[in-house]
Length: 245
Ligand SMILES: NC(=O)c1ccc[n+]([C@@H]2O[C@H](COP(=O)([O-])OP(=O)(O)OC[C@H]3O[C@@H](n4cnc5c(N)ncnc54)[C@H](OP(=O)(O)O)[C@@H]3O)[C@@H](O)[C@H]2O)c1
Image 1 (tube, rainbow, N blue to C red):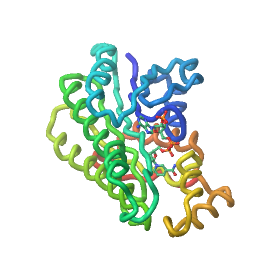
Image 2: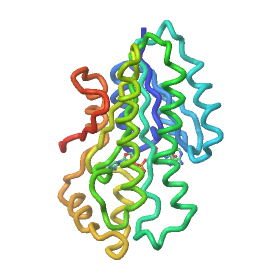
Image 3: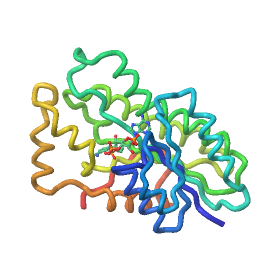
Image 4: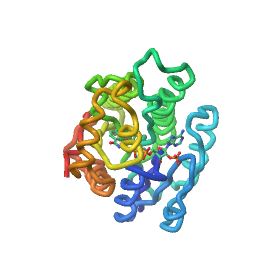
């Protein structure tokens, strides 16, 4: 019997840290992102190159991936909705319609679509099943300049909670968790530090966190997310946070 992880945005950042943790525990990994990471290929990760904002292509790719799995050989299957973006940083009146739409698609619509396909495809499987939505503290706290990001992450917290309610009475239902990774040393943080005070009022705090070496590292975050996924004491529907190193 083997375990399987299907993750979005595994090519770099937090996704690559999550993949490292699952690989080191012998899990078979499938990753969907726009670019292919050669190191991950060498490590045996099956990578699917797809821009997830092309919503009409998702179903075929995902079902194609699911169909590679053997019902009788899988003890646990996990979907991690990790790919996400800030979109344009700045007050709402400065944002254009296309950026708003694409950011909400990636951060919110894609986790909805993938979770729907996942729950439906595996409904009769005897394996353990979990969905982890990578959320943010920004889902719970409004930041000046992050209206779309905060709102799109708030939506996946509620997605997590509603999946938990819908699956509660299902025999061998899907467990759903939302996990905020803390402030992590990735390209997304570099993008935040490259913004300006007019567009993002809290920029100095994020510059200081980097200067003070206070950012979480991707490998530690990945390990903690793996542990949470395997912690039976965590209730489905929980909104969790990775504590600092
Ligand atoms: N870093 C933090 O401090 C922090 C804090 C709270 C929450 N988070 C959340 O953690 C998650 C990962 O963030 P990160 O910091 O690791 O960001 P990152 O370094 O920018 O990585 C983002 C990942 O998403 C993929 N991705 C982006 N757009 C995509 C698209 N259109 N289609 C397919 N894949 C796409 C990227 O791969 P490609 O470029 O190859 O497509 C990459 O693998 C996000 O959901 C983010 O909101 C991060």
